[in-house]
Length: 231
DNA sequence: GACCAGGCACATC
DNA sequence: GATGTGCATGGT
Image (cartoon, rainbow, N blue to C red; front, top):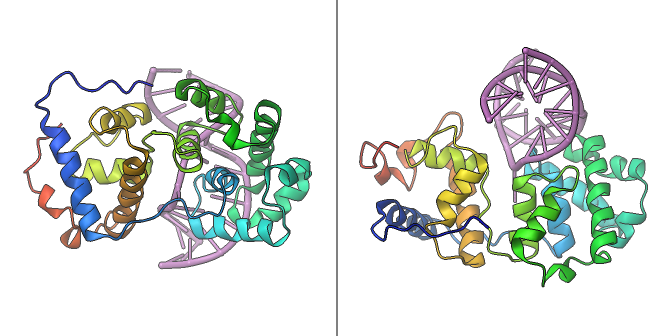
């Protein structure tokens, strides 16, 4: 991937990123993402959570579980309209049913319905394959790669962008690939680190970086008030 | 009732 | 390449 380490050894931002992680890890308990019992549940959840609160995703997943349908094979066999009805609580359910079916079709045809069969596929190639599936964009693909398959890919989202821009580490309008590169080029390529770091950013973003921020209580407060360079 | 939530595809300029 | 819009439920 475009994960070339920075040439310069003395990169002040690298230290800050590690400092931010340590501060978050000290303040919050390990987030233990992704909350799921199987890889396919992670992948399905990654699509269901697009622009959707997680509580609504849980309702949809629970319904699939209650019907014993949370497997690649069963979901692949299910009709799109039936699937849409079941995942209704997650919102945009017709759109997501179509996207899920596209993903399940891909998984079935390319990897015989087994995510574990992707193990030997080079990361860049696998990411490209996922991105070619209807309904799978950068964040969904990376969530699957990191949280379902355990590949060293840093996932970024709106919380990541909000938290880092509030702390003046990146511009507010930074694009997905640039923001991902911002992390990946400065951190060791470690799935466990990427996993916990992103989850912690979501945690701190939810609690302190909402539309009405609670910066006064934010554990990253030490980074505010001009201590960081304005990028 | 408005606004938001762990995005993406598509149309239009 | 940048910007705007539809998708839709459930919580605040």
